[in-house]
Length: 327
Image: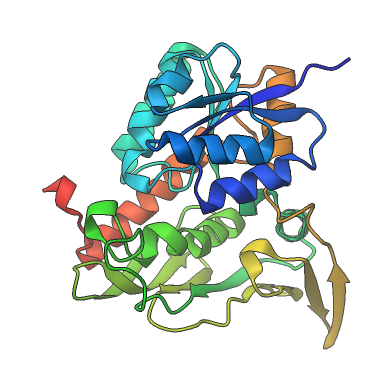
């Protein structure tokens, strides 16, 4: 019988529940441990998903011999520190995006993965979405001709949220860019590569966090127009267009359940649903990498995460987005 990958969950919040529910749909993995700063929360989560071990500290989970891989779902500010601690204890790591606050964080994480010879991947779940993978395949195969234009936005109203919460609190590296702006940036990078030039502008909230950012990525022969915001709803569609046709990712595009292709004035719709919410696809990728002994994914590599963080660093440099812990 094939041995299952034994997962430890670090921080049992909303996104961890989505991850855990999708893990149920994957036959070769299971949750064996949960850690939270609140032992009661850890025990409640463990009961819901039949995990055998609970811990009131993250470090205690990293010591647990019943854990092969760790899923880190804490706020951005602790991703790098916790990932390095886990890898130094020999654990494989899937870390929620963004991997860190800046490129230096990601460099430390990659160095820890290499030093300990363990697997590390950013949980950029949209990279493994079936519709996005299909769009990427079409682009790479030249089915749309030379790509000239990418558009993607991601926005919702969040100014009614608790100002001490994750989105509006500068102490938690809040704002739209790191939380949701990463998605449009990811799509442009995936389809067009690293841009020659970045132009960016932001608006800010009274707490000091950025709540709207518009970006233009300039390439030789192509442009990407990107947006993230917490001040209003956005259409949340994505478009990849070339000389011979276009692909449209249906809303909400980062978790698309299908896509459309336009050629010669004709539009065809294709349904391509995700397994569960969509987290199952990245879980499957981790499991397949571990079975092969790969220490990074070829679909979303360490270099990809470093590039993505570098692009967000450049947007932050241009717009003046800074956090108190960086002062």
